Length: 245
Image 1: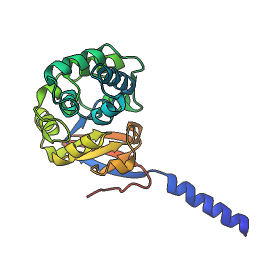
Image 2: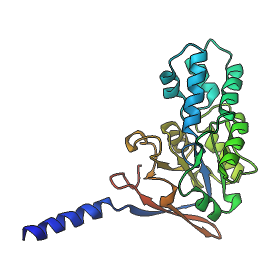
Image 3: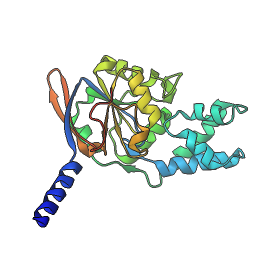
């Protein structure tokens, strides 16, 4: 009897660990770049550490602010006494020159191959030059048109980047799905009226409260293309809400 109860408990534990399947309908998909399509975390950290030391700051302070934000806004927050435009060029040169360790994240290439090109684009806080360099370095298809730090006046967590992405696709924001990994990005997508799916690549689930759904990575996402749009199949993280209203 004791063994039977042990088997039942183990079975329940295994069942509790299985992902929860959910379907989401949409007409367009907006991908963040770093932490969703590729990982260039090493380059980002090294570049900001170099910049911080150049400007007499502790690298840890710069890194806490930089993730998920436009570099020009990060500089303005950290060193409002400096010329943000000039500092942006310094940071961009550092990051463009450093692609060491850049990798494509799991599930990305298969997912993009299944998506019609007119149904998706990239919405990132990186500059356009850096975006195109990094995507090309990772072998990720580069959309002809995308939304970068150069195309908006207010970056994430402001909704402007994702509103611009929806407009680029010719789709209402509420018919778009956003894939993000940062709290500021999830907040921006939600504020724009999009459905936000966050991965836990760079932040724990508890930091991604603005997201509607949580998945481990893009291997937990499937695509069904229909005449009037897309159906995304999601294997949600256990322990996370299936919908965060």
